[in-house]
Length: 313
Image (cartoon, rainbow, N blue to C red; front, side, top):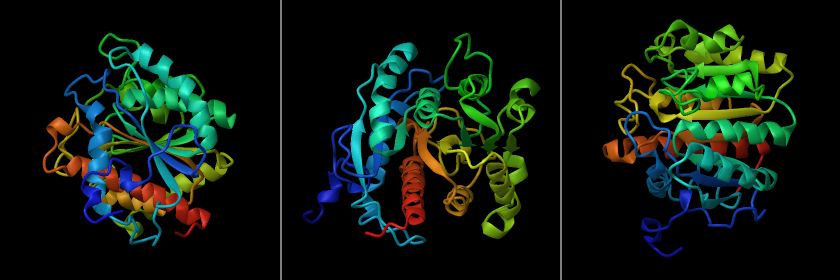
């Protein structure tokens, strides 16, 4: 790559661009540029491009903890072709594209609003032939019974996934929850047997030593359930707005970037099969803080997966 070419390179981390389904790398990034279910501030459809731009200055992408780069191991598949006005139409167009991608790559998805996660979990459930464990970073529980009068949306996917048997209830873990909600929604996951680490419980806990009891509890849950395939869904609004102002429904009192990175790094050896990063809204961002955080989280996830596979550039 010529000098300064990173300024205009379209791929995440300057990864090579590839056609969907071309099995030329074990890992792949793809955008799902959809925000038709947003209930407050729109703009998440612009996030895949913004996250890619924010990743440009990671340069050769060697992670300082893992000493590994996704270069040579991953490709960018661009944004999947989808309609942008109908949730049912989006899911109908998305679902047929997923089996080929899951068969060819370990996928990381750049959203988009959080309504994209339900069809993704449906596809992963079918691909692996068993329910998944889920680590869900979010300010919101996403367990409401309807979505401002709509039966499905970015605030209902957790309840739908549990009701459909897509996930292992005991291995469904929520982190950073703090929004207003009635008891039925707020405790939905816990009532089904899952774990909730509310943002209040995480205040003042940072670094591996302080977070170890919580992370060990997650490990024990995963082991007790027979190590199911694990999926990571990271809503950027899990972060305090000081770290991620560019999101549709910001909630004060959230996590720090370093807290999220500690969890991603210390749980890197769990049996992860995929990740999405959602709800970045570039029109409301400041100095690309939210896109930068999202790019670092995705980069850290990819490098953690490579490290556990023993890959070296």
